[in-house]
Length: 317
Image (tube, rainbow, N blue to C red; front, side, top):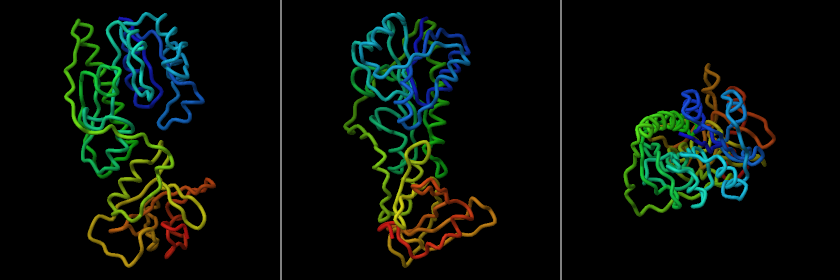
């Protein structure tokens, strides 16, 4: 079987390595041009891994342009995996694989179709997410489902930890699927339809923290946007601060403070447990790691030592 691979996101790397090391017929890998990939959250350098695996690597700007069409047509592929790719594939590109093209979506389809499903699942306070392997069609995230993996969301998870689980599940599901395809079985069941609107695309400017929300919502928002994503942010003392880590004060705490107001420092012999308590609309969170817009990192003792009590992130003063 002649297999092609399209991807640039970290979620596709474990599966790519597993399929290549198993000698299952990958002819080439197509990835996004490096300058464009560098602007995408969660992008990974496919050059190093393809060099190690001795796989031809081709950079493209648009998977649907004429150049990409000619490249794929010449490959004469049976099957293509599109794992960690943001551009929808046009019908004429989809037709270039004899068996079909398989994609993955980091949710339990049909739930959470659309953009940034892991980030939205955390922001919305969901208790579980998942990953779906499915046949690509002209309609986004609506093809027949091949396999699914349930992923619980714990209070300790971030977008990074969940995408690591997504990456592992891609590897497991793709290897299972290939084992079936090599026997001649074409897996897939019709995806049921639902009335959910697709999740909207997120942009860096969407990361502004709304301190009037309850503490759980603020905590979820921060962990949904942490590295490698652009980050949740707020303004204080004339600077923009990106919040990379926080902790939730879980309980019925009442503070005489306005939303966004710094209540005071948290001290601990454990450096990474030090921080600053900030009031929310209901409750409070502890800020554990901040990065100022000039690149200065505040964490641990350095963060606790700041004289910010009474200052307010909500109005930047």
